Image (tube, rainbow, N blue to C red; front, side, top):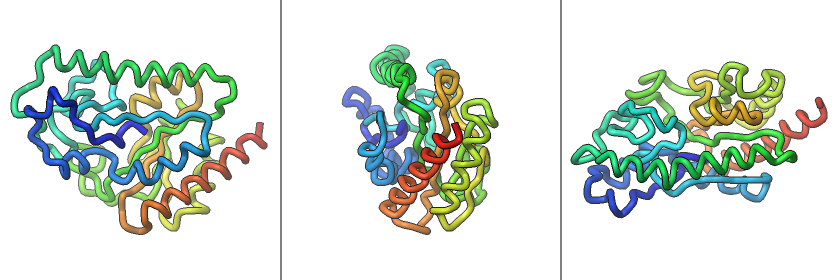
Length: 227
């Protein structure tokens, strides 16, 4: 769960222009409520307290776009910093938070008992200005495997069906998201999918959480039987 954090490190707070509401809006709102119950259901769980507006774990360390690893603007195109961050600040964020996060994911991939890794997100109900689908209404669930590169398509079919059995609305595969840096990089180490849930009000976070647990439980059982 790379985008559930809300923390701006103390050394950067004075330079951050964003309100807490803007920090929440730029991250994965409700991710904590939806995905935290998975801690009791899975073999391994990793998250971060750092706000996505400060450091995006789902970007490569050398991604210097304004919506890159250390962002200059939110996904709503709002400037984040009063003054551009020093190179030393950026390096400190990468070394102390970004690198350890990804090192831990790579360590988990070495565990022989892990079947599938899930990059857990929530998404705005309508595409923000910085995104693949500005202004477009999004599905309730989007499952991404980088178009077959990070997880077998046969497994994606099972996952899509399982989520369709739980969620009342549309469940898509690779639209509008096929996966980010996490699924691209770590998908070479073990099967990875990106899971995006709409923040639309069609259900409470608690209901969405229950549906996610049910869908993943059903899908994993079906995948194991297929092997």
